[in-house]
Amino acid sequence: MPPLQRIPSNQTISETRTSVSTHRFKTGGDDENGSRVQSCLPVIKKRVKRTIAKTPFLQSIPPKENVMAIGHFMRSEIRIGKKLGEGGYAEVYEIEAFDLCPQTSGKYSKDMQTIRSKFQKEAIDPSTGRCRYVIKHMRKSSLEKSRGEFATGVADMAAEASYLMRFEHANILSLRGLPSKGLESLEDGKHDSFFLILDRITETLNERIVRWRSEEKQNKKTKIMHSKQIASALEYLHSHRIVYRDIKPQNIGIDSNDNIVLFDFGLCRQLPASPGESDAVYKLARAGTRRYMAPEVVAQASYNCKADIYGWSLVVWQMFTLAKPFSAYNEQSHLKYVCVGDERPALNLLDSLKSPHEDIYFPVPKSIRAILTKTWDASHIKRPGMHSVCCELESLLTRQTNKPPSRFSRLVSGNRKVRVVNV
Image 1 (cartoon, rainbow, N blue to C red):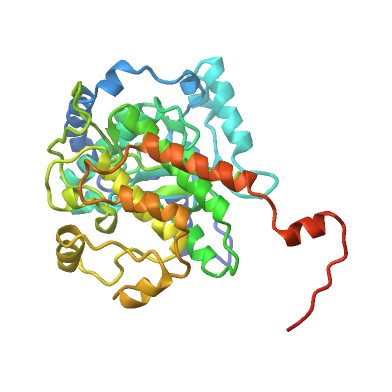
Image 2 (image 1 turned 180 degrees about the vertical axis):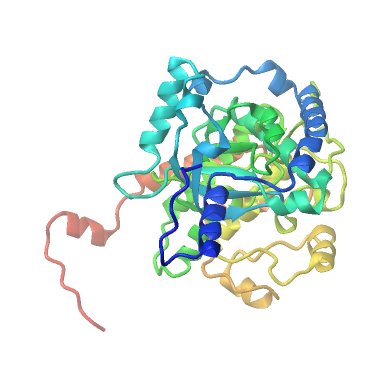
């Protein structure tokens, strides 16, 4: 906390208190629910231990080589800016700066001091003026509502951190920082004592879809590339028998290089090994967002990684049509018509006009339709695996790249004069 300063003559005591309160908020200040936070710690540790015990991936796969580059910080050293979003339990803020404490830094090794200084210097991208990193921590309201909810949320975040330290894939968001004392940081009694520091994305896929609606020309190749990148991230998870369980545009980011990054792994689970039974299903809790849930998940039946493939198909459909799937249905209608009646979204403009849902902006290209009809099949056994989907999309991208230019394009590239006649 900064040293006390004299109150200017034109500033009231009330305004000073507001300023101090704002500073405490931005640096994770005092929390009146301290004892409630501390009382949750034993429960959280127990849940994390149970999750790791059930997850061979977390036991057998060592953290990736660059895990030593993950910075360790006290919450009070992180100055936050505007709120960027929130989920079931947590919220995300941009990080304006790292205000490193000399006393705290002195307790670290030289290597960690170097890493911390690097984050401090690179907090702002000089070319854009944007914050490079974000912090994800629990919402204060989750603690005030229920200790059980708070404990569940922190345990999920801790599990997410364990996964991210081991994932190695270009289309999965990277973990950049953690609290210095890990879960023990909750002994400080603050709701935001445990946190994750992550790369800041440029926008979510959901935001990109909204932006695409105002553009007359759509880039088919870009959308196929994004579809493949999402599929590639899921293929990587599925190769480790990890089911993501919450695929939706809001959980898919786009970085500064226009590449897809999957984030928010709080709901992912590893399935038990089952040699020779690739289509074996397992009793898992219903999780995710209803409109993207596979029918078997909505019905609370057993499922496997193929549930992600169904969700992927609806995300891809939304990318190409720019419409929200099953927009007219409430929970009961969705169950009746989609999960039981096998209704699927319209693939062309004519079918869209006949449906009760919002009109699609653009039809799905014929080359993509065949993939979607297979991946959103009601039977998980009939859905292809993600490896097969990636191969099909790669083939489509190759054909798009090698596609011969139109006659008009050849004329222009040949520097011939093209006369345009208005008719």
